Length: 269
Image 1 (tube, rainbow, N blue to C red):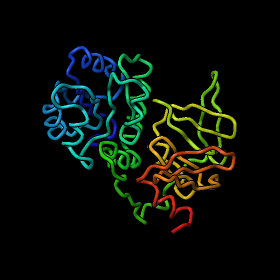
Image 2: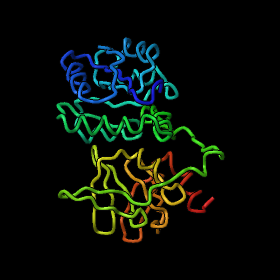
Image 3: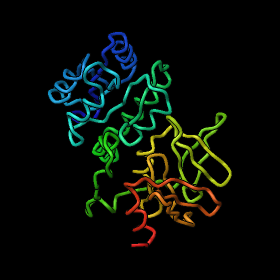
Image 4: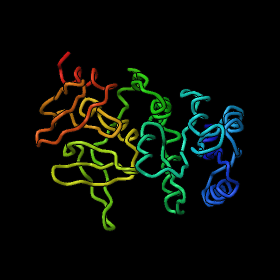
């Protein structure tokens, strides 16, 4: 970022009232500069390239050139951290789990906006956000995520999650990651499964994947991250479909793009 205390934001939406609402909400946030606005896809592409914003609020549904088309045009390496704004149903938003810092479903309230922006603001300056937006276009095509490697010079400084905070009834409980069997996507939430208990948290799957120790956890599907030592059986279907079965009998789908890596991680190859 050009200034560590100032976040430069680009707002992209074809509806004037929608752009104004985001602008008004950002006016209440400290250290925020509206770098610009755009009301269509081509203008958004030009603004992103010309203004280099720190964060983009990007409407998905725009006539002619959609928000996803904008992301394709800019390219994964150059696309800033992005909050998608959409009228899509929450379950359809699972498609953005690999791509978005967060997403806002219209109509959204002030509290939900604040949560999304503060999370984006926190992540915008972190290496985790860089890894996330480098894979921004993964969801737009049927291929494995772009390979990422952690330079040996930065590996010693990596600190993975040991506990995950869960809010419930005005209290915050800390769940040890060692207790988590798997994590599933649930609309705009992630669901921690700990034995017979389930805990909903407002975190994107990709963010959690980036913060979990890869020697212990693996993303096996867009909607599932599993703790590898909980895998009891790998099931191969007649049509080439894979599932893992956990020690408690739970079955989770394995996407085609993750099969070879899972076999390697399980010591099969």
